[in-house]
Length: 348
Image 1 (spheres, rainbow, N blue to C red):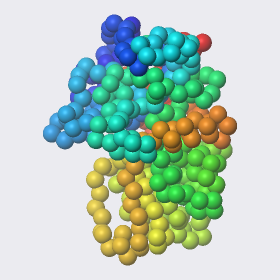
Image 2: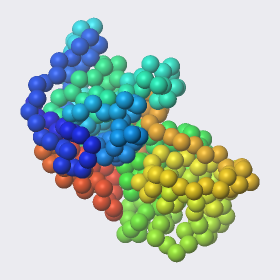
Image 3: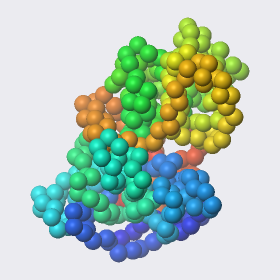
Image 4: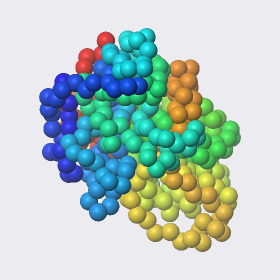
């Protein structure tokens, strides 16, 4: 089969198109013909070595074992099954839950042995992938491409909104609102949980599109005084922040948070380290959450919301598998709206 492998830490030159054997499903596993695979920051940061220390990167301390096929937002058709898997699984259209874990229900994402597809396992930048049958869920939409727009970004976004316990009538600021996680944060917070959303973007040409997703107000982080603008449009301090940017907006958003406010961060595209005056936290009684991925229960809730039309796919562009380098390069450009999708095979 055709696949794209990461051969080591570095730039997109470390992505190589190869021909490798089709994997064989073992006990409890299925073979999935990959029809679409969304691109996430996680596989780019894995390749760049951004997660780890001491030259290693990945979701586990030992680092990634190269070569590795990345890709975690996977949809496709089950074409073969291993032992102890019902033959009836064959032909099912599925979306893959993105990691294995021995953690108990509700704590799967923080288990020490959490292992991620595309990092600890070969992932979806390929024509076929094997995965445990119990982690294959019914595809929520009728097309593979649209159903691939949610897995990691959607699970991450859903868990972030649950972390802050979003409530109807509260005001939530969403940073990176035009990205994969951010665009879903906007939809989930507003259309599922009923919050008022202020979307932060770089390009105000996206204003109407962000409002279509559910944002009440749209502001640019390039403004002269973002904290003041937030206080003005909200007519007072904000209740919570859902942040994927990190350092670039951290201190500004803390200023705009109300006393007792909540700040949830799940990315650091605008800087991985920051300076913090602890007095800001304790004098304002702020709760700070670190968040990534989520639980299987949250994943099912997200799929149900997608099936019911409450959350819609936002896709910026698609690429054939062979153009993974170009797709990852474009992914890092600013100004796009939504997900970038790789198509390893023609959608049927």
